Image 1 (cartoon, rainbow, N blue to C red):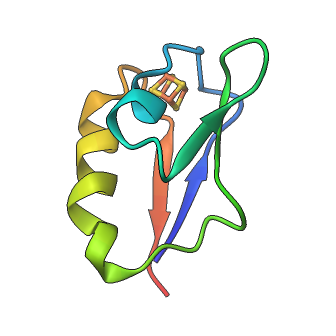
Image 2 (tube, protein in one colour):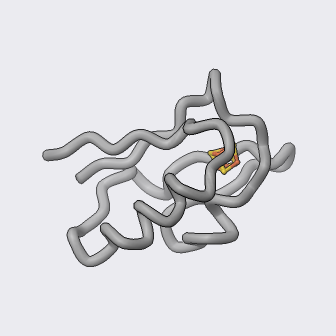
Image 3 (cartoon, rainbow, N blue to C red):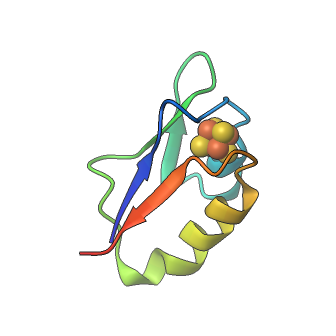
Length: 65
Ligand code: SF4
């Protein structure tokens, strides 16, 4: 799967990176992006779901490969 952060929605709450620091990183202003190219293995599905649940503005999307 591939994870993406919708930069038009992200409001820099930082909860995704707090919940799943291996998957998300924050810029200097606290806005999130997926680490690397956003491709993550099945073993991270639970962590991805936790981050999605944690995000207050539903900015995280998952594209199934
Ligand atoms: S939790 Fe949501 S709003 Fe907060 S930094 Fe992550 S993607 Fe952005």
